[in-house]
Length: 242
Image 1 (cartoon, rainbow, N blue to C red):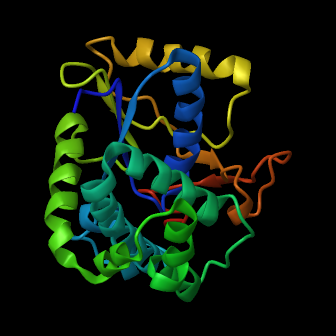
Image 2 (cartoon, rainbow, N blue to C red):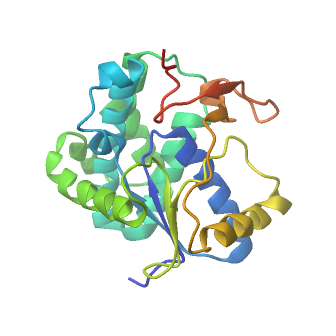
C-alpha cells in the first residue's frame, strides 16, 4: 500500500482526536490528501498509571472501551484495508460524539466497548458481524501496542491523542493540535498551513495551554452553535489538582 500524505493516530473515545479528525477531513477534501487512520490506545499508553489517583472515575471504563473498539478496527482493517478503518472511525465518532449527551458515569462509557453498541454500526457499514469477536480478543493488542509505540516514537512519550505524521516516513510529526471548535470551511486549510509551518521549524518543541473549551460536540453537551465552558486540564483530564 502506498504511503499516505497523513498518518493520523487515533483512539476512538478521545473527543479531541475526533474533533481534530473532523478538521483533518476538511483539509483532506481541500488538498486532496490521502489519510491513513492508525491506532494509539489511551488504555495502553496509561497502563502504568493508577487511574483512581489520576483520572475521574469514568476514564478507566472509557479508555478500556477505546481499546476494545481499536481491536475491532484492527480486525476490520485486516479484512477491508485502509478504507474500512476510514469508514469505521467516522461511524464510531459520529455515534460516540455527535449524538445525545452521555453522563460521566463508568457504565455509560463502558457501553461503548460492547457488542450491543458496535453491532448496529458494523451492520450500517455492511461489515461482517464476525468482527464483534475482536472486542474480547486481546491478541489484537500486539498490533495496537506496536502502532502506539510507533506514534510515541515520533513525538516522545509525554503526549496524548491524536498524533499526526505529515508526509511519512520522513515528514514531521506532532501531538494534536488540540482544538475545541471546528474552523470554518474557508479557514480549514489555512489553519493547517499555520500548524505545519510552525511544526516544520527544527527548533520547535511545544506550544500549549491547559485552559481548553469543552469540545463542540453534542455528546459533551455543546451544540455546533455554542461555545463550551473553559476548563483547566491536567495530564489529559479535567480533574483539578489540589
